[in-house]
Length: 123
Length: 172
Image (cartoon, rainbow over all chains, first blue to last red; front, side, top):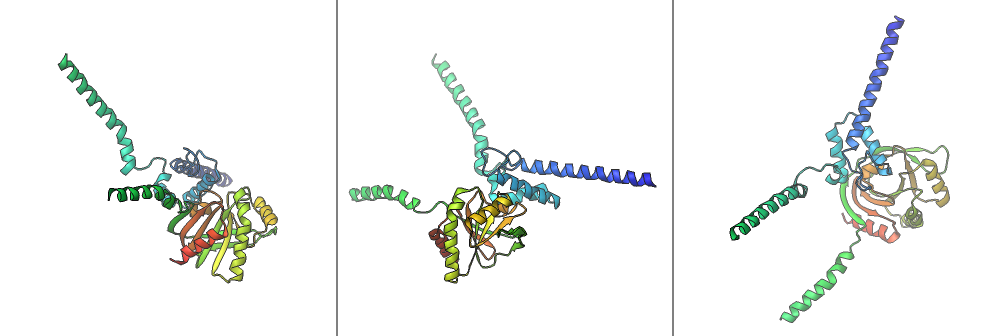
């Protein structure tokens, strides 16, 4: 009987450890997707600024309440706007920014090929 | 006719920058509901300070965020104290509250004992209220009316700015 109780306690302890490690990972995961609004190019996870610490605290509370990652990210977007996201969604101006380098590259290649062909004809 | 048009163009180019600079960039319009139900510790220099629940924000509130290590926060205390006196003497329907953030409680108490703010000052036990208000730094002052944040002012505040904020808020 005593052995059974000990086994049960050990199992509970490991479940607790597993849960807390899962929560810590989730807090890190979410804070890594948010930019620290007062730092330069650092995510909340990377930053030790006072505001980033407060944001981590809010994330921790929300994770412990069982809120999903999307709910938590949406909350921070409502507070600070979409610029708070480390990976902003590809739409509008950010889509144009992402597309412009390959478009410029393709355009330059076409332009270069046409010039080369023109020069060949002249020769 | 063309000389008149040229004159208008020159005047526009000369004065448009002045018109845009006359708007204070530190005053930021927000227009967002705020729901808070959070326990705070009153800073009053006592070792066993009372706890209060900060919630509702019914009526007009001016919420000033400060920290003991922040220079402009020290400089603006006298202005906030004068404004609190004005609230008393003119019986204004405004609540001025100072919230200490990004700080240690013992440093906040030291600050209180040294500068003696006349208005209610509280310490954020949970270190989360700054996110609820979207505070970016200290000092910042928020104008809240009936549970809605209407404006915030970033930086050192003075009586004129406080009055301007109240005038703006009461027009809503």
